[in-house]
Length: 310
Image (cartoon, rainbow, N blue to C red; front, side, top):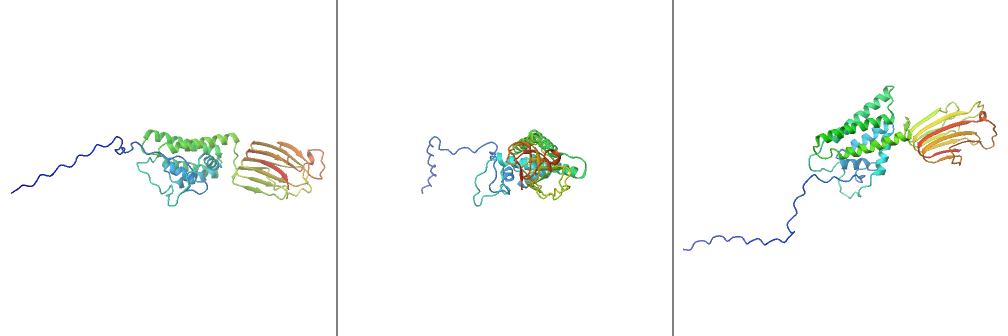
């Protein structure tokens, strides 16, 4: 009776040529995406969606923060425009691509950016309440400086903890934008006023405001309907404007004296590129300042200024 043969040994593994082994798995933290405007998560320009993809903080928080800063003196609009200009556009969205809110990345993420943004919104909200219900007027400088302080505290906490991803990168970018916006606001002396396009059309001399304050957006002051009958002295008004174009319209027959001081932008006074002058109306005759109908002073931080006749 014969016994079973022992199992044969497996064939030897042939030598692998050099470089044919699979590469080792990558080590270290995952690569951070580039800061770009989102094409898949966008309402206006994709800025908030791009910040969400870069930092992991929900885009809704970035949008709420931009709105809060805009209501708090117009600085949110400045920051958004700066980001829109500085951030390159991301790749076009393909069908089926998830939005920034739907993307989930592996690895632990630090809670510092989210907490910092939440604290920033709380501080801005408190500042708005104080401005509305007390005599305290923080202005754009106060809001931006406070926001920069909150972001700085978040950076310090993120540097001390160093746990998780996204603890510093997004906050550094936000701090740089806030600092740039603060520098812009400081250089152009942004006034405290409305934000957005505004048009004023007074019908009487008494309805013309002494000062028109406007923080950001296009401003139109239409004086063509003002009744100049029996006017004993010139109508004096001042336009204090921050960012945007200023357009002033006066009656054809009115004698107007204009003084304009524009930081960044062009000035056009009745087709003249000078910054000041006295301009007689069509068919009018005058010899001194007492016969002027309007004396207008315009100060604009950034934007074009135009004074013309209707």
